[in-house]
Length: 356
Ligand code: KG4
Ligand code: ZN
Image (cartoon, rainbow, N blue to C red; front, side, top):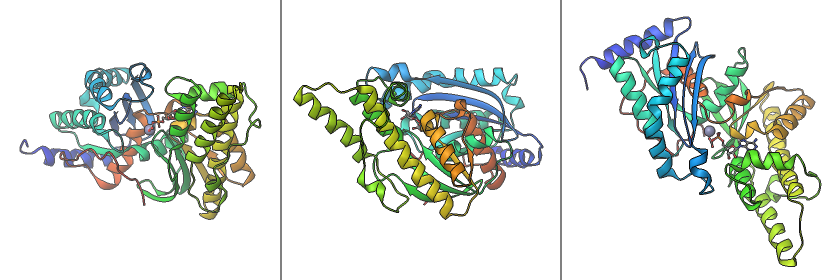
C-alpha cells in the first residue's frame, strides 16, 4: 500500500461530507450490464453509461457468468470514460469512487470493484463499496428528490424479491421475501417456456398486452396465507404443467392469454403482500424497485392498490429500474456520508444480504 493513501482518502472523505454537492463516480458490474454514472449531491444524475451484454447471453437463454466477467473486463474502462465525458469531467473533478460489491456474480463483481479501487487509489479519492439492493432502493431517491425514509420498498429483480422496511438511508429490515424463485426469475423461466427470448420479462410483458389476464387461474397456494413471504415456483409450475398437458392432448393454447394470466398472478401476489407490509409497519409511503419495477402492469396495479390503502406510491423512472450505476452512486453517497470509506481489501460478496 502506498504510504499515505488512507490518510489522503480519509481527509478527502471528510471533504466529501462537508461539500454541498459532492460528486460520486459509481461502477455497476454485478450481472450482465457494465455501467458507470456520475451523480452530484447523491441525487442529481449528471451522466449515465450502460453497456448491456444481452446480445452475448441471448443465444444461451440466460447469463453465462464466465462470458459476463470477460465482457466486463473489455468494456469497463470505456464505459467509465464515457460517463465522465458525458458529465464533462475528468477523474480529478470526482470526490469519491464507488462500486457494487454484492450481491451478484462473483467474477462480474470483481471487475467493477477492482477497477473502482484502482481509480480511487491512483487519484487519492475515497473508495466506497455499495450494496446492489440498496442501490435499487436508492433509485427512488433519484426520481423523488424529497423522498426520505422511513418507507416500505418492494424490491423485485432477477435475483431478489424482498419486501424491505427502509428505516434510514443505511438501515434496512427484511419484512418478507420469496421462498423460492425471484419475480424476475419466474418471468424469465415462463418466458422461456413460451418460446420467448432472453431476458424474458420485457418480452412476456409485450405478449401479455394482447392476452386475457382472466383466461387462466395460476395459483401458488402458499401466497394465500397471512405471511409476508411469498412463492413463485408454484405459479411457474402451474403454467408449465398446463402447457405440457395441452401439448400431450394436441390442444393449442393462446400464448398471450397464458402470459397475461401468469403476469396477473405474480402482480396480484406482489401487490397484496407489499401493501399489507406497509400497513402493518405504519409507514405512509410504499415504493417499488428492481428490474421488474419496469413492468407497467405491476407499476399500475401497485399504484392503484397503494392509493386504495391511503399510501403514497413511488417507483423509479424507467431508466433507473434495471441495473444502472446512478442508483449505486446514490446508495454509495449515503453510505459514505454515514460510515466513511471502505478498505481497499473489500472483497466481492456474491450472496450479500442487505437486511435480516
Ligand atoms: O434488477 P435487474 O436489472 O437485475 C438484477 O438485479 O437481477 O432485474 C432483471 C430482471 C430480469 O429477470 C428481467 O426479466 C426483469 O428484471 N424485467 C422485467 C421487465 N423488465 C425487466 N420483468 C417483467 N417485466 C418487465 N418489463
Ligand atoms: Zn439489479
